[in-house]
Length: 257
Image (cartoon, rainbow, N blue to C red; front, top):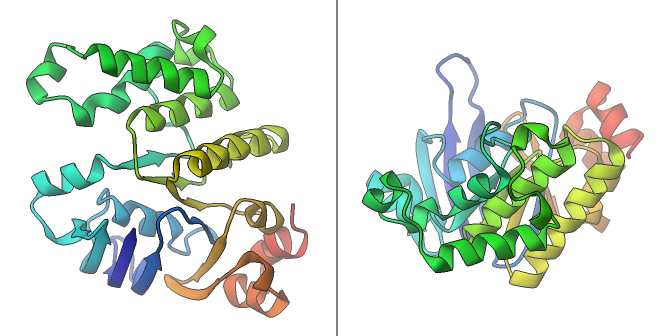
């Protein structure tokens, strides 16, 4: 589903590359969790996959098409099959829940129809189904600003679901939530992806928590992959390889969740 070859990116504001020579193959339907310290390159890798960040070099094949090396119009078509969920929700706070979820249909509607807000009966039905799946149908007319953090992330999941994606990228989707809501949101997201055969690539911090939601774990340190295997294969040495014996190692690896 996703094949990455020799991917490298360096931000102009930094001396070191954010990601370095990444090679990775993710199969359809996998649930892959990226782990590593803050600044290790997890978010950059996720954002390169859907070309929110333009990589400096390398190739990213999404369902057989190289999104990193094609015209932006072609990249937008590829991106229409990739949903993105962010740590801080990335919602329109002043708009209603329904309007935010309807925005997930924008990549499937022509520019002219978007300008005039013309969506089809099917679009509205998809939005209603998406809201029902995340348990928010009764909140459809509520302004997002009035919702709790857990509810906002459910709106974000519904918006992504209404996009009908083949892939969902989740960049620390539960870091802004308390432990109870973390589990509820990840259970919901993982179950939806399992039901619909959606490939899920997420970044999470706490290792014991990450293991629950992954069929495969990828550890990144200083922009390079240092671990790539099943969750049960992760051992103490691997954890130190990923985090070093730092505060992150103690919090996320040693203590767990």
